[in-house]
Length: 170
Image (cartoon, rainbow, N blue to C red):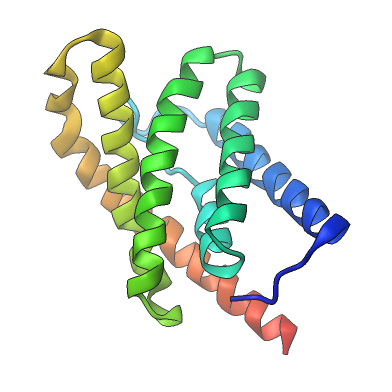
């Protein structure tokens, strides 16, 4: 983990990472659906979340994730996005914190598929609460497959980012 940055430097770094994650989120929202199963997307903004959890710490990751989720709902003009993204993001964040204690620096890429599965589970639980029906859980098997595939991609990207930034520091 990096040496913590404090004060204005920390705020600037968190603001920059939030802007990067939000930009990725908004750009990905412009990509047409990859499948007919609702909720399936790459989740590229999660590369930033994985990076922050493993490089800066869980608290900073939660701040950036919260900012991205809130601003993403505001800028997309879809208030329901806030509920689903917050539920999925929080469950995913909790999972990343647990995996951070179990994985080595070379195994970070494994965290993303697991976190992606829990992200989808969080979104389905939110949908079940909103709709007052467990019927949405029928999507879970499809979303697990999609989460593992997309999570592997984002996990490998996050691992490459962390390795690259570690080399730049040396």
